[in-house]
Length: 149
Image (cartoon, rainbow, N blue to C red; front, side, top):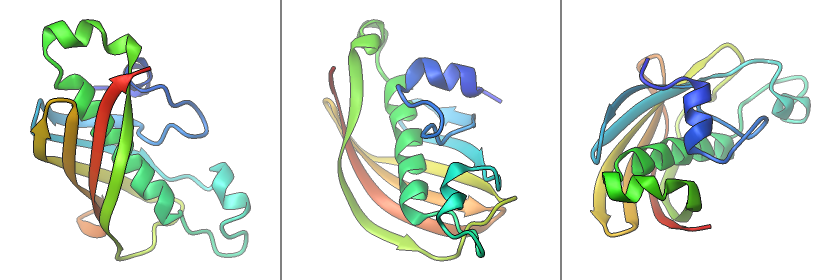
């Protein structure tokens, strides 16, 4: 484990019930991050999606991948820029080529694998994939920008 949920909360502004990364297990600054979220039946989203057939929503998978990308962007900042990270936030600019390949259900460990496609200045473009075990369940291209709060 590289970052636990307490470390992640020092980087991202998200909190329960919208913090969607439990751990970061691998990071290569400026290039790649791997982390996960354990999907539990106690997630508030399952009260309405769907009570008799719980499926973790695709939009939540995309948001989890986006949060992992945000962690990667912040952890990749230079020392000088990192000092000011408390006054920055990551805004997502676009989500392209999103595909949902298999349902995610309670008990699954949703693994996010995010690779930097491009990085120029404050703008980051990511190839984002989500897996359950070794099965690809979702993917998208995400673009984000680090901006002042």
